Image 1 (tube, rainbow, N blue to C red):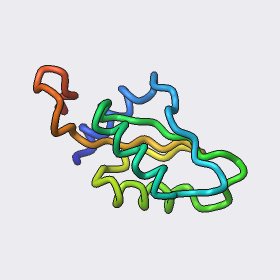
Image 2 (tube, rainbow, N blue to C red):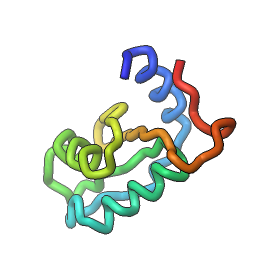
Image 3 (cartoon, rainbow, N blue to C red):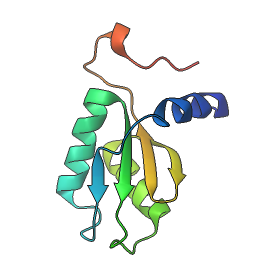
Length: 98
């Protein structure tokens, strides 16, 4: 992913609300499945890591990205933004990267 594409996705993600909250249980198979399902529907998702989770945010982002075959767009504070192109969405409703 180029820096221009990453910048475009960050711009799109700035208006998104986090759809999943990762708590002290950290990255469980259920969380991974939920993120994968959300990525298939939305392509771009924002996650929130709660304060009771003491794991490194960057490690959590990389672990989820590896397990869901997605890319980490941005990690700011306790927010993680992930992107994965949808396989089932019609072409007209996909996010088109510059």
